Image 1 (spheres, helix red, strand yellow):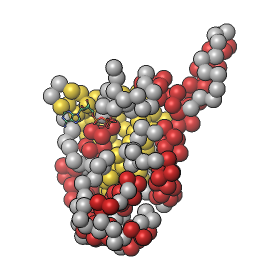
Image 2 (spheres, rainbow, N blue to C red; image 1 turned 90 degrees about the vertical axis):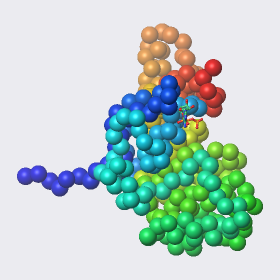
Image 3 (cartoon, rainbow, N blue to C red; image 1 turned 30 degrees about the vertical axis):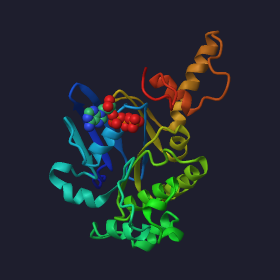
Length: 267
Ligand SMILES: Nc1ncnc2c1ncn2[C@@H]1O[C@H](COP(=O)(O)OP(=O)(O)OP(=O)(O)O)[C@@H](O)[C@H]1O
């Protein structure tokens, strides 16, 4: 007897390709993210992270390939999908002369159901800024507002494009705490980041992209262990240790892309 059919994965991507003229931004991506999982997209500038996220978010169409979110696809189920995903882009365009509370109320009005404005403010700890104009927020407060706007429709999947870029270490850690709370609540999250510490702390699995292709994927700890294995083999073969310290996700990134994590584009 067959058991119950398991639910479709939160995100399922098959043979995804995106070309911009001669540029192959995404080159045959295959990816599956389980419900409740936090997946990190890493890679140097221009690796295809934002393009991949925008296709998943329904903001761009792929040149080739298939995308299913929660078993639904953008071509047939755009309206349902819009109600079930939340998006915080690298730069969210906001009205400078609306208050935080008014901005949240505006975004809440786009959804048939979702969080109360009050609840969304509380989730991102912006209660004391509710009356402030958006233009007077600090970078960290603005990022938290973007997160609240992504959350206000109470989505099943949250897409975050570099949620902590440009923040000072303290604001970054504060945002990590909020993201950890969201994860603990069982929501599926896909985020892109250049910060390996962020990926290590927040993500169940990471995918490392380079020139539109996946060059490595797995749990951060597994990727680190795979390099440590290589190190042990080297020692057994009598070669000098390549790394005289603990392997970190930075080393993994370097090993698979040939770049340090924030070196920018390939020379
Ligand atoms: N609208 C566009 N038109 C033409 N080329 C584009 C467009 N969007 C992205 N690209 C190109 O596609 C490639 C992938 O860009 P993408 O922004 O997805 O990379 P990324 O990994 O998000 O980079 P970053 O870390 O700098 O944000 C780059 O070569 C970029 O120049």
